[in-house]
Length: 516
Image 1 (cartoon, helix red, strand yellow):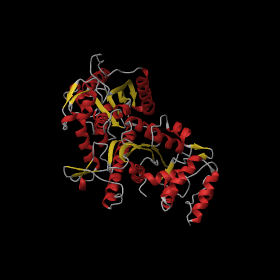
Image 2: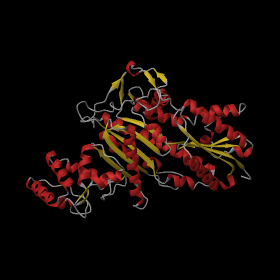
Image 3: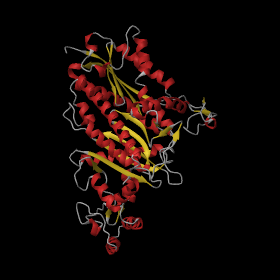
Image 4: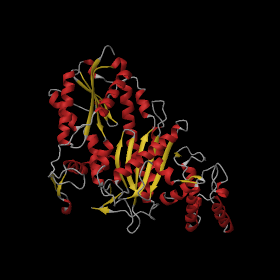
């Protein structure tokens, strides 16, 4: 490429999950999730047009022609890539790079209050030493993000009324479609709500199949995910993340490779989510979920029992009907595995996922953090299993437990006989072993033939951790001509506990929250 050193700017945001999920209403999360991607579009174009008025600014060229790098051929500016919550920009002139950072961050203070941007600048990004330069600018970004807290809010006066929905000052008027919801709210909340309608349309255009765009929609209300009136209202929050993709990005030896990988992940992640939603629609049409679904309608459109919140890079977050969370996560993983199976990167792409099932009105940020924690547990199990495969962990929050998933399981899911949970579980390898979700599902189908009263008795015996009570239960079932499902790895159906482990607690929870 010859000698090519330029100024590089790397854009990111701080505490993004807290910004998106710290509100109370689903509509806020939808608007906020759209904002964190939108800031890399129109706000960037606006500043670049002011800096380079004679240049036609296009932010998509890096995807359309990844091998074309114009910054090394005399251009003043070029997009390296945009994706995965980052944007890498190149400037010929260091002063222009600094002006861009100043104007972009200042504009965000007005356009997206509460969102905290982070920017890293290096003045000698060397395309001939690409890997070292990329590492250096990401290291610099981490220093910026951890060096000092950035205050992006105007301090509130002591006499200001507090917005009950966001905790900020009541400083702007919001006109709601529902007159009872109109009133003064914080500027942070108003911005999220203002973007919600645009965000919802974008999600529907991108993810709902064309054949259903006039009849199906995504809801912005947590209570319209297909729950039946009179039943306990559970939702599932699913967070899925790619395995080892950071390492794969760091192995890219030039910008062309980084661009192709970023575009590939962005495309396949979106396609996997589209396929998962299509799978859901087909099952609804086949009336597979009629026993627990009660779909809502509005203006001749039916709300799907799923609400995507983040679909970008290799990162997906959505909320759904409680009984569909594990099933949808499983479908997403399998679709992603199928779609990424053939690739040019000599890499097997996999996902880890966490599914938190909780009462609908549990504080959402707390619930999301638990889903994220579950995803982390799945990744931890994967690392302990030769860094291979797709893994899923789930948790049903019946009460208001606090702490991490590890804390919760250590305090509440251990008995004198051993661990109640065998999860996380491997997804998509179709091997009949004790770590496979497929194995658990098949065994759970057998468990479903046992009377519910006996299943609840089994749950009580497991929670007690009493081996003798377990043997009595097994004998009672035997007298009735029934047995517990067999399971790989030991004589569980006779002993219930083998080597301090039991599969039946996981099965009982799957029986309640998986459409068998």
